[in-house]
Image (cartoon, rainbow, N blue to C red; front, side, top):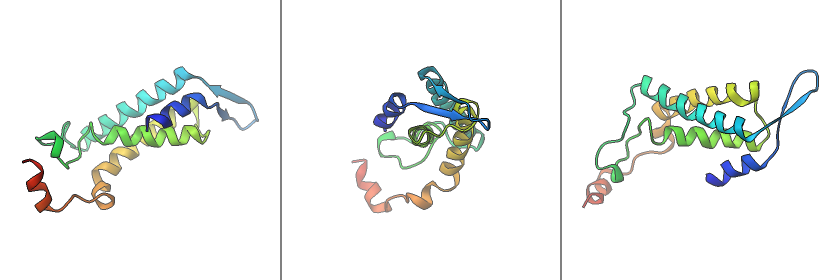
Length: 128
Protein backbone atom coordinates (compact mmCIF):
# COMPACT_ATOMS: atom_id res chain seq x y z
CA UNK A 1 0.00 0.00 0.00
CA UNK A 2 2.87 2.37 0.66
CA UNK A 3 3.92 1.78 -2.92
CA UNK A 4 0.54 3.15 -4.04
CA UNK A 5 0.99 6.27 -1.93
CA UNK A 6 4.49 6.92 -3.26
CA UNK A 7 3.27 6.26 -6.80
CA UNK A 8 0.54 8.87 -6.35
CA UNK A 9 3.17 11.40 -5.30
CA UNK A 10 5.24 10.61 -8.38
CA UNK A 11 2.39 10.78 -10.86
CA UNK A 12 1.07 14.04 -12.23
CA UNK A 13 -2.56 14.53 -11.26
CA UNK A 14 -4.64 16.85 -13.39
CA UNK A 15 -7.91 18.29 -12.22
CA UNK A 16 -10.17 19.42 -15.00
CA UNK A 17 -12.90 22.01 -15.16
CA UNK A 18 -15.81 22.44 -17.49
CA UNK A 19 -14.00 25.07 -19.58
CA UNK A 20 -11.03 22.80 -20.29
CA UNK A 21 -8.55 24.39 -17.86
CA UNK A 22 -6.39 21.85 -16.05
CA UNK A 23 -4.42 22.33 -12.87
CA UNK A 24 -1.77 20.06 -11.39
CA UNK A 25 -2.02 18.74 -7.84
CA UNK A 26 1.18 19.22 -5.88
CA UNK A 27 2.63 17.13 -3.09
CA UNK A 28 1.32 19.46 -0.39
CA UNK A 29 -2.25 19.05 -1.69
CA UNK A 30 -1.84 15.28 -1.68
CA UNK A 31 -0.59 15.27 1.91
CA UNK A 32 -3.53 17.45 2.98
CA UNK A 33 -5.94 15.11 1.17
CA UNK A 34 -4.46 12.07 2.91
CA UNK A 35 -4.72 13.78 6.30
CA UNK A 36 -8.34 14.73 5.58
CA UNK A 37 -9.30 11.17 4.63
CA UNK A 38 -7.62 9.77 7.76
CA UNK A 39 -9.27 12.29 10.08
CA UNK A 40 -12.73 11.98 8.53
CA UNK A 41 -12.65 8.17 8.56
CA UNK A 42 -11.66 8.06 12.24
CA UNK A 43 -14.22 10.70 13.28
CA UNK A 44 -17.08 9.07 11.38
CA UNK A 45 -16.10 5.64 12.75
CA UNK A 46 -16.23 7.02 16.28
CA UNK A 47 -19.62 8.62 15.55
CA UNK A 48 -20.82 5.19 14.37
CA UNK A 49 -19.79 3.82 17.78
CA UNK A 50 -16.83 1.76 16.64
CA UNK A 51 -14.30 1.32 19.48
CA UNK A 52 -11.10 3.33 19.24
CA UNK A 53 -8.92 0.23 19.70
CA UNK A 54 -9.73 -3.46 19.20
CA UNK A 55 -10.13 -5.88 22.11
CA UNK A 56 -7.07 -7.16 23.94
CA UNK A 57 -4.88 -8.97 23.05
CA UNK A 58 -4.45 -6.66 20.06
CA UNK A 59 -2.37 -9.15 18.13
CA UNK A 60 -5.07 -11.81 17.96
CA UNK A 61 -8.12 -9.58 17.90
CA UNK A 62 -10.38 -9.83 14.86
CA UNK A 63 -12.58 -6.92 15.88
CA UNK A 64 -12.70 -3.75 13.83
CA UNK A 65 -11.98 -0.37 15.38
CA UNK A 66 -11.71 3.28 14.45
CA UNK A 67 -7.92 3.10 14.14
CA UNK A 68 -7.69 -0.20 12.28
CA UNK A 69 -8.70 -0.95 9.45
CA UNK A 70 -10.83 2.16 8.82
CA UNK A 71 -8.12 4.74 7.89
CA UNK A 72 -6.03 2.13 6.09
CA UNK A 73 -8.92 1.28 3.77
CA UNK A 74 -9.62 4.98 3.22
CA UNK A 75 -6.00 5.82 2.33
CA UNK A 76 -5.82 2.85 -0.03
CA UNK A 77 -8.97 3.80 -1.91
CA UNK A 78 -7.90 7.45 -2.13
CA UNK A 79 -4.51 6.48 -3.53
CA UNK A 80 -6.25 4.34 -6.19
CA UNK A 81 -8.23 7.39 -7.29
CA UNK A 82 -5.11 9.56 -7.39
CA UNK A 83 -3.15 7.02 -9.42
CA UNK A 84 -6.02 6.95 -11.90
CA UNK A 85 -5.69 10.77 -12.13
CA UNK A 86 -9.16 11.34 -10.73
CA UNK A 87 -9.40 13.97 -8.03
CA UNK A 88 -12.98 15.30 -8.39
CA UNK A 89 -13.57 18.92 -7.28
CA UNK A 90 -11.41 21.23 -5.18
CA UNK A 91 -8.13 19.36 -5.65
CA UNK A 92 -9.33 16.12 -4.09
CA UNK A 93 -10.69 17.52 -0.84
CA UNK A 94 -14.31 16.57 -1.61
CA UNK A 95 -13.18 13.13 -2.77
CA UNK A 96 -11.26 12.68 0.50
CA UNK A 97 -14.38 13.55 2.51
CA UNK A 98 -16.56 11.15 0.54
CA UNK A 99 -14.06 8.29 0.78
CA UNK A 100 -13.54 8.88 4.52
CA UNK A 101 -17.27 8.65 5.18
CA UNK A 102 -17.76 5.63 2.91
CA UNK A 103 -14.83 3.72 4.40
CA UNK A 104 -16.19 4.16 7.94
CA UNK A 105 -19.63 3.00 6.81
CA UNK A 106 -18.04 0.03 5.02
CA UNK A 107 -16.09 -1.05 8.10
CA UNK A 108 -19.11 -0.68 10.37
CA UNK A 109 -21.73 -2.43 8.25
CA UNK A 110 -20.11 -4.47 5.44
CA UNK A 111 -16.62 -5.50 6.58
CA UNK A 112 -17.52 -8.90 8.04
CA UNK A 113 -19.72 -9.81 5.07
CA UNK A 114 -16.71 -9.54 2.77
CA UNK A 115 -13.98 -10.59 5.24
CA UNK A 116 -15.55 -13.06 7.71
CA UNK A 117 -14.02 -13.86 11.09
CA UNK A 118 -12.13 -17.15 11.39
CA UNK A 119 -13.82 -20.08 13.15
CA UNK A 120 -13.89 -19.99 16.96
CA UNK A 121 -11.71 -23.11 17.32
CA UNK A 122 -8.78 -21.39 15.63
CA UNK A 123 -9.15 -18.29 17.78
CA UNK A 124 -8.80 -20.21 21.06
CA UNK A 125 -5.39 -21.61 20.11
CA UNK A 126 -4.10 -18.32 18.71
CA UNK A 127 -3.57 -16.68 22.10
CA UNK A 128 -1.48 -19.51 23.53
